[in-house]
Length: 329
Image (cartoon, rainbow, N blue to C red):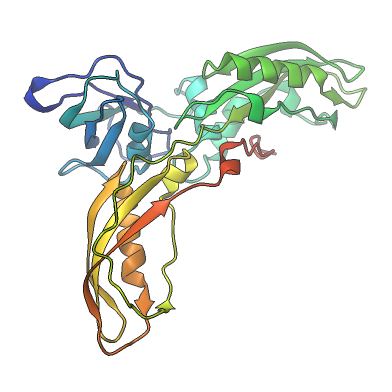
C-alpha cells in the first residue's frame, strides 16, 4: 500500500487542494514499513494537471504505477508550479493484517502479478457462499457501465453483499465496501437485486464486485514535429508501438518527440527523447521503439530526424471490461 506525502515545489511553493491518486496495491517482499521508495519529480500546469513526470534521482523504479497515478491526479487550478517533488510512503501488512478494503482493491486492480490465493480466501473464501455446493446463477444482471460516471485515471469499484433465499432470489443486498462512487454502488445494488440463482441452495454472506474503468484522459497539447527527414526509404523492420502498461491500464494518453539519425545501412542511432508528456514513460517506450526499428539500406542515411509518437486509445477502451474472474474458484 502506498500513501502520498506532501508536495514541495520550487521556491517553497506548495499546491493547494487537489486529488492525488494512490498507486495500485501490490504484493511485495523485503519492504520495510514507512520506506519512502517512490519519489517523483514533476511540474503542474495552469489547469492543475501534473506533467513532465519522471523518477527523482535515486528513486526505486520497480513500481511503475506511481507515475501513472500521479498523471491522473489533479491539483487546484490557477497555481502552476515547477520543480515539484512527491514521495509515496510504503505501508505493509500481511494478508491477515491488511484492511479488508485494501485487499479488495488489490484483487480488482493489482499492480503486478495476480494476488496469491490467500487474498482471495480472506475476501471471499470464508463466506458461506464460497462453500460447496456453490450456488448456480441463472440470471446475471450487469450495470450499464457506459452510462455510469467515471473518473480520469482512477478505477472505481464496489463490493456488494447479499443472501440467497430458498427460492433463488437475492435479499439483504448491501454495499460492503467501495471507492465512494455512489452511482456505481446503486447500480451494483440493483444488478444483484435483479439477479437470480437456482432454488434449493440458500446461502448467506455472498459477495460480488463490480468496477468501472477510468475515463480516458487525453494527452497534453502536442508540439509540432519539425526537422523530420525527407526522402527516407521504406521501413525494413517497421516500428512497433508498445503502450506503457501502467498508463494504458489507467487509460491515460501521451506522446513523445524523438530525434535520431539513420545510417546508410538503415539502422537508427543517436536516439534521444526531446520531450515526452505527461510522463517520461512515453519517451522511454518511444525511444526503445525507434531503436528496434530499421530502414531499408539506401547508401545515404540521414541525420537529425524527428518523429512525434502518439499514444492514443480507441474510444471503446473507456468502457468497462468487467470480467468474471474477480472471484477465485
